[in-house]
Amino acid sequence: MSYLKVSGNQFVDGTGSPFVLLGAGLGGWMMMENFISGFPGCEFHIREALAEAIGVEKASLFFEKFLDNFFAEADARFFKSLGLNCVRIAVNYHHFEDDMNPRILKKDAFKHLDRVVSLCAAESIYTIIDLHSAPGGQSGGWHADAGTHLGNFWKHKDFQDRFVWLWTQIAEHYKENHWVAGYNLMNEPADPDPRHAGLIDIYDRTYGAINAIDSHHILFLDGNTFATDFTKFPEDSTTRWGANVAFAIHDYSTFGFPTSPEVYKGTDDQKAQMKLAYVRKRRWMDDRGLCVWNGEWGPVYGRMEYDGEETEEINRGRYMVLKDQLEIYRKDSLSWSIWLYKDIGFQGMVFVSQDTPYMKHFREFLLKKHRLAVDAWGADNRYVKHIYEPIMNLIKQEVAEPDRKLYPPIWGLENRVNRISRTILVAEFMVKEWAEMFVGMADKELMSLAKSFAFEKCQKREELNSILKANASSMV
Image (cartoon, rainbow, N blue to C red):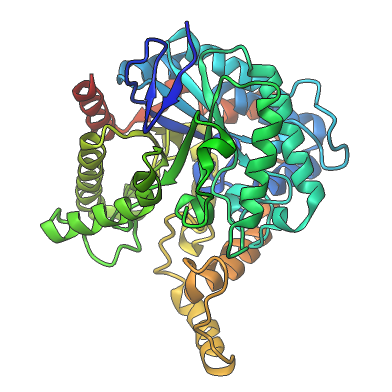
């Protein structure tokens, strides 16, 4: 078989025929995220805390079994049954090197990634390797696993050198694998330079390093400021980075989240707003005839344990958002990767059942975490908003130019206060509490918790999956 390629503004297969990538993000697996699997803070927090609470050996057992169970043969088969053909695999650089032993590839660095790439290939599913967390943190998001609201990747050359080195290791490993569609170099970069100079430079360096090893695979390049802004990208991008490049937008609609300014009813005005946001994100590429890939999108969903009798009504609107976004993409023959394949119930196509050992054991903790709104993603802050409003009022009253746009400007004052005080500070205080809930468990109990994430222990979000399946059928 042949590698997938970019030809002009579309993907093509080995015969040169157009090929539309339809898939989902495998997040929360080799890059664990708090809202996906229920812990507070960042992945490095819980790994350190669990090793301290129950010992390195037992903590390693839990995390290894978690990785084994989260995506297995049954997941790949189910994914294929929906007519989807691509999995975007989010990975954390920590799986490949240690911060205290940089540029030394770990012995089992590719163990889990190889397994899932092979499982997907066996079902004729392509994979895209997505470096979701870079050394130092490429953004101030929890998903960069840096524990800060600042992207220190952009301030230290050594972090950048390690990033380039890591991609040479990945490219060398997968250069002859046709089922790897390509490399998503950096998830949601947030380079504060107004010229995007840091991001363009790191793309220059990484392209050169990869191309010297592997000139076959597609490079997927996210726009700046969380894959939304390409306005400072170079005009000579095709000669600079080659023609085998797709530019990645992340097209989350505000209508799909609890913070939506209004309930989504699918009115003409709402549809127009949704399309305008999408068109604005891809305009730079469209004006130049370049290939666009939507690397992340999708609403979050109401849950009975948190939203009660409002759940059904909430989800009715969210599925409407989903359908209307898909219709926009279908008309453009857009390739996309919905976020998310699996989690504990907020956004996943499949989610861990409430009657599993993991969900039973952490039920009260998860209820508290939700009430305190310690996860940034899709947070419902109704119970704690009054706590943080005085901080915002203080800044407005006492700080000169409180409306000054700090980077990233899309956060705004309220989001910045929430991220720093709630989703970083409060979350850090809860990490040890989460870890101590494992104390005293035998190996069998730890393995039982991890097995809760296995496909057979999960429920399927039936309406979401039926919508995706119908859309995939319509694209054939």
